[in-house]
Amino acid sequence: MTVELRPATADDQGAIWAILEPVYRAGETYCIDRDISREDALADWFASPFTVFVAERDGVVLGTSHVGRNRPGGASHVANASFATATAARGQGVAAALVAHAKDWARGQGFRAMQFNFVVASNDDAVHSWKKAGFDVVGRLPGAFLHPSLGYVDALVMYHDLTEGAADAA
Image (cartoon, rainbow, N blue to C red):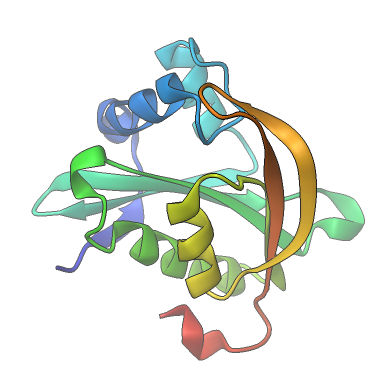
């Protein structure tokens, strides 16, 4: 089942919040306060230097990403991205489509690499998905994330060279 990806608009904020809210409230995958307000969450998701995208099927938003520069200055050639998929759409290729699109978009913007700074190691689906998309674990931060039920778990730094294997982004 294919999804269409497009830049998000202000009209998508309700759908994006509906995706982000349960993820943030669970507190298992993002370094975001579990009680963050809708306004603060959307302000963070749409903050510069990120560009927000949505994945939709038949006009229904199933996932979202934001992609942009990881750091300024001498590191401005490395992109960063975050992703979230609606609970009902998980396992349908939405995350794979979002990450492939993020890599293509970043490459098109002149980024040479993409780095995920903090992937919670217990988030098996994300770790598997990002490895399948060509990302390597290049660092491990022992006990860096306080998971609400597992306690302190590791966080991973994951990296993908966008200058090699451009064809694998699809």
